[in-house]
Image 1 (tube, rainbow, N blue to C red):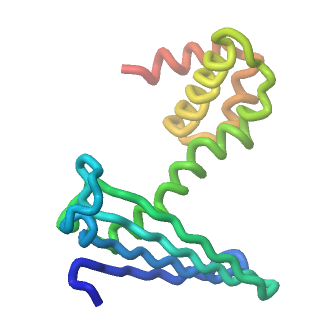
Image 2 (tube, rainbow, N blue to C red):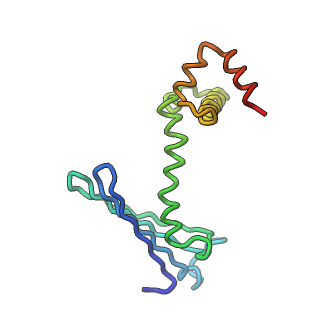
Image 3 (cartoon, helix red, strand yellow):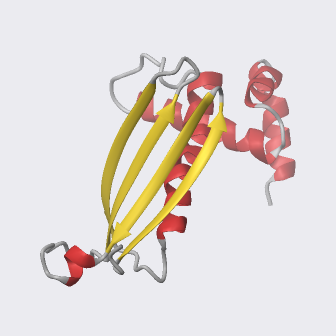
Length: 157
């Protein structure tokens, strides 16, 4: 194996499927001057192999460039990072879409769509701050805006 190349692999069993993820990083191309990308420190290749419950398999390969050095981000850390981005997606956008219907919104003109998204995001953040589910918060305060204003007044510094 090339000393400039590092590899990390994880295997996860979840929802009736087995997914193997392998990240390989290299600095060889950058060190040899083949890549002229400002700030590039490592090249990354992420290979996913998924065995589904019905016996079929899926494979995909993603290539990336990072400005993080090998001492800052080794192959194991980059592998964790590639999986961790879904946490952000599931925690934020998925809740906005499912609980508050953000994607189903038909408002398209002017600044209304952005303003409604801001209101939905505020409701999501308040629900998390008050440790309450977003739908419950919306139901509780939908017909009682004074209750919401009083609660906001007492909870803000």
